[in-house]
Image 1 (cartoon, helix red, strand yellow):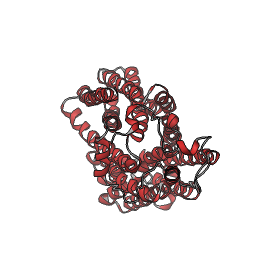
Image 2 (image 1 turned 90 degrees about the horizontal axis):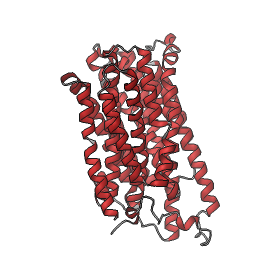
Image 3 (image 1 turned 180 degrees about the horizontal axis):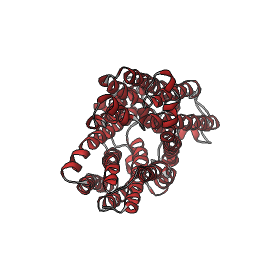
Image 4 (image 1 turned 45 degrees about the vertical axis):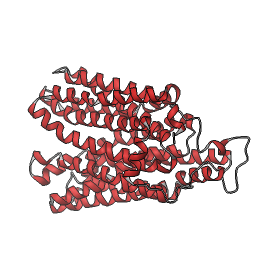
Amino acid sequence: MTNPAEGADTPAISALAPAVSPVAPPAAGVPSAPEVAAIRRRTNAVLIASQVLGGLGVATAIALAAVLAQDIGGSEAVAGLASTASVIGTALLSVPLAALMAARGRRAGLTLAYLIAAAGGAVVVVAAVLGWFPLLLAGMAAFGAGSSANLQARFAAADLAEPQHRARTISLVVWATTIGAVTGPNLAGPAGRSLAGFGIPQTAGPFVWGTGIFLIAGALVWFLLRPDPLLTARAIAAGAGDGPDDSGADRSVRAGWRAVTASPRALLALAAITGSHTVMVAVMVMTPVDLSHHGADLELIGFVISGHIAGMYAFSPVMGWLADRVGRVAVIGFGMGLLALATLLAGTSGGDHTQSAVGLFLLGLGWSAGLVAGSALLTDSVPGAARTAAQGLSDLASNAAAGAGGALSGVVVAQAGYGWLNALAATLLLPLAVLALRAARHRG
């Protein structure tokens, strides 16, 4: 059966359409149009607040993760394993968390994710005190649940969003991460020094703060994300007679993959999210190394990375607006162009730090376009019963691929150089172009 969302970037038919119609009265137990609007506003406010906290918790702690790993592991060679463990944890936890949300709602899944992240932060602190490196990696993997919550929040925002504003709603939640992501690294130093008198290593102090922040975020979601947006959207669809009975639906990764591969536009969306994230991570993680090799000091490296983060998050509402106005596929194509230009500029920058900064900014901007438009297109293009499985699959695929890309990027730079890393990253965009053409033909 063809999904109606596949024929246009913004679907003409939505599970919410009967509920928000001013003509048809709501069924018994189904929220009215004004009630849906109020629930939507409350949901977005809670998600934005939790994203600010979640971004702050992740960024404050991660800023010194590599230094902490080096201190405990005793070698620069293992410094990157802390962040790698966090990315792997994010990927592995995405699917079970998505399954929990499908069964119990967004509130239960997001709250559990923040609690797991808080527990992971506490384990990292214990590992730092004991000097036990394997325990550090285990804690970092659990800490990755904080990033899982931040990623899944964008889909929670899409549950009750009006189809014509879905990308914009997703982008606002993504944008909220900017506040914590930019502020967090600047708080890492004071957070570490604040606990020096308690026998906690300075590099582990930020994880204490991150644990507390995640607990607050979890409490915020648990007590205020009511009614649950996903369960409410299902109730509206079921009350209107448009929603399938998905009580026994298969919510596994395999089910998500079947739903995605059945739709060329959903497959493009998954590739856009995964490809954008992989290209961004692979290039970004080695840029500080390349800059330092060309004489950049820590302040300049920090400035370049800050500009990159601004490109990732600060302009996401613009990408959401464009995706709603000109179409999801068009914005994905725009993002591909930005990523290609970014790899060209970064890969040929040599010692030109200004060119590197511009390239990294465009790298973040291209990632934003791919994530926002891809997330909206994925939500549009799969049936409601398989939606959470497909969303969990997208986070699993994007983080697993990005983790592999980040791990291999160091090998590529060591063997061939930073320019070749950017060239290889650009080749990952070619399958995206093929899928975009295929999706365009399918629409026609």
